[in-house]
Length: 301
Image 1 (cartoon, one colour):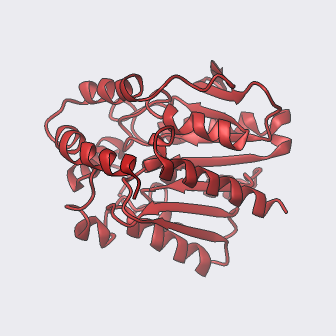
Image 2: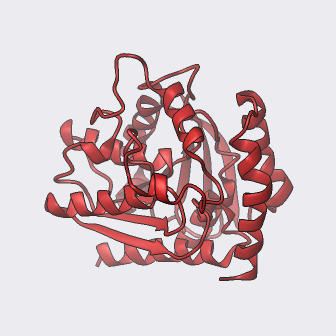
């Protein structure tokens, strides 16, 4: 374990987890999560460009390498349990992905719950993806990634594209993904005290905001782990062995494999959930992103 990882876990356990999983009001939680990027993260690398664009009606942040031609496009769906997070809160990972993988990274600022329950966010990310398919850069490679709830949305997007006979991405990357909104994975209970970021309450609250009364958490519409997982593109799942979401990734990998698909499970030891977000200062985060690059090379051989 790196010194940076030790200190980050300590901070999350002592400062972040009690505050964000306590009585912090939603609007304040949103502001504080965005402010983390200004407090702890340096400015985007000088080799990167950063623009705000509206794509198919959805506000997006677009990050791209300025000194080299991008090798493709990555649609990144941020986490935050459907009610928190933004392109700003996730610049720590999206800038590193753009820099390390030489990709244009597009981050939709999709509508959040409870103001906009399902399917608003899912419709937003699909609208952005369908535009990206038409761009020249997509010919060099088009990928989808997401963390926590965003990872589940990424898998659901791939399923929707398959069912609608639309162009699939070349690969999907799920980082510490939430794939079962029933929260029935064993690690949700066994690792709740070990996880330095999350508690059952934060997942229950976010899912409660997100789901309208007409949709059950067990519906394949919202829980990709309970959907038909056949005929999907190659999928890389990265997860920590000390987070509550561990078994969601293990179960998803097993189910995709049983359905005849390609799923690579990459389990990391003793790192925080979504450790990639701290990649700019965390060696384990940078290494995880490099593994994503290795996965891309392997499927393109």
